[in-house]
Amino acid sequence: MEVGSGLSVKAKSDLVLVELAKNGQEKAFATLMNRYKDSIYYMLLKMVSNPSDAEDLTIEAFGKAFGNLDSYSPKFAFSTWLFKIATNNCVDFIRKKQLAPPPLDHIQENENPASNIQSDLPDPEEILINDQKIAVLKDVLNQLKPPYKTLIELRYYKEYSYEEIAAELKLPIGTVKVQLYRAKNLLYDIFKKTGNL
Image (cartoon, rainbow, N blue to C red):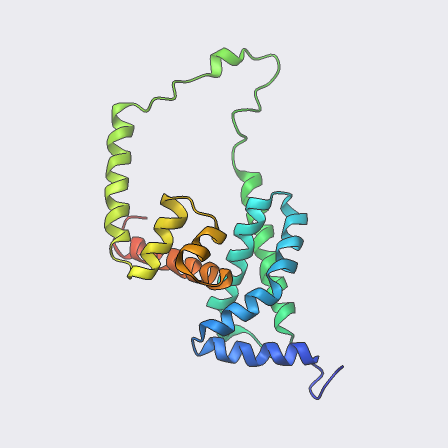
């Protein structure tokens, strides 16, 4: 199956898609994503043992890869490069999770659980801060172009699944995931520019 430069037929076909993706062709992004998303997802699932985290990490891996296509070297198969990005990103995620403080449900047995229970009601200061954050978020969200704004609203306000968003917007699920990743990046950029990070 090896042809010419030592890359397999599939790897050569990936190269063509990468070039198209570099030129902004959405279909090329979606095709690459559909080709590798399941294998990336199952690899990450083995690493984190949490389907929700594995799904988010899969999207992040593709987002990082698509955002850095210019640094990809055709000396290696695209899949090798993509798996390396996914693995490194996952290792970072696990490291950060290990540094995070343990959740409250890990109360030591000799402690009195009642002494750790706090009121679920936010105090007035928290309410004010949350209201301000919501106002800022709405303002930032309004700066996004309509398709991206809609995606963010469906995913994070209405809590639609990727499948529900794809059905609602009549888009392939790969396109939904790629565009949602872009929408999150655009939001992040706006937050940085407006000093709200």
